[in-house]
Length: 229
Image 1: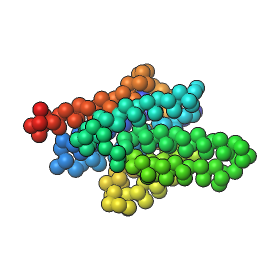
Image 2: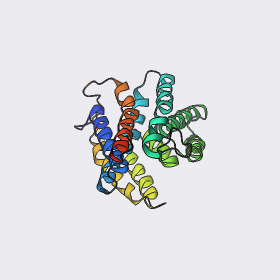
Image 3: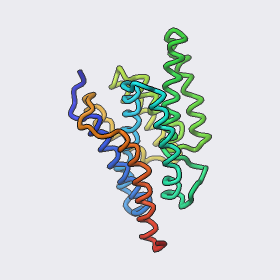
Image 4: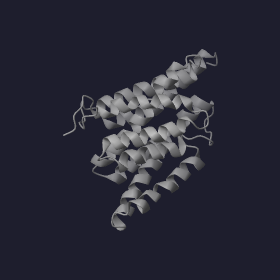
């Protein structure tokens, strides 16, 4: 049995609060750089929870449908909040990253099975999804796919999973001036405190819907702040 004090609900709550702080800082309060640092906690937690969700889901096609639906629904709010445009195709929202990550680990599982547990061949299944993330310009790009894949492939060995995540995160932090990404390492202690339980019940669609909803609120707040409304 996993020991820890944080349930899935607790981690989700930390993630959405961190994400909100990050987006408020980016759009409304860019002078307060520390808000972006706080925001680095969110994505690793979401990646970890996607891996966990895949472990427990009763229907992968339904899970895939939910990710696809909210990827599409979130794109306009995402573009309004960050690009002040209804649609902007150079950068896609994080649900597309999670969607591609889901596809990567599903294909990994299929190849692992049909190749009689040839891990090298199975891991190669992740690479096309990394390439797709880069071509589509999804949030975090190939690094996001690698985060989720690391959590999934090493899910039976949590310490190694965290080390793999930390390694990928450090490489990302040292490339393309993403040094702020170092703050994401602060998520590791939180993930190691996960107890494997759902915790307080909340409708799963709440956490999906929160993403586009909070982006719309931030967009409207930005319009008000800058005197556009």
